Length: 112
Image 1 (tube, rainbow, N blue to C red):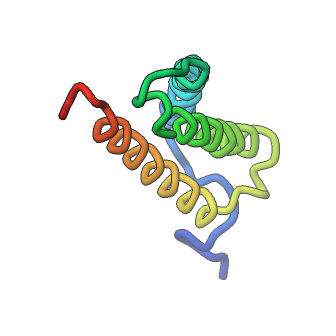
Image 2 (tube, rainbow, N blue to C red):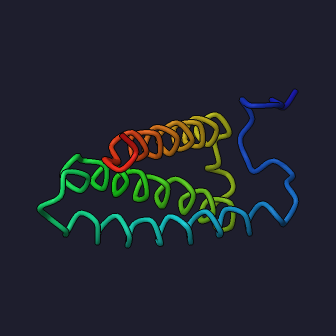
């Protein structure tokens, strides 16, 4: 009997809209990568020296790897699509993004 659910291999039947959503996530990650790189290049301000831009650089690169890898595997090699790995990658991305934006909000000196 074939395995079903999270332990199965292969791409689950998803609407085509999901690939566009993943592409939009990649586009937004590239924008954040550029903005965080610019913020990291600035110096002399406490906000930019707090480490937030560096963490956002990491998070955007992480998202590019996770979601870009998902799209490539979905299209070209669906037999290597591990559902648990995709779920863990997406959950870590969400946790990283939430913590990055929270750290960014807390580190802003104008909010204190």
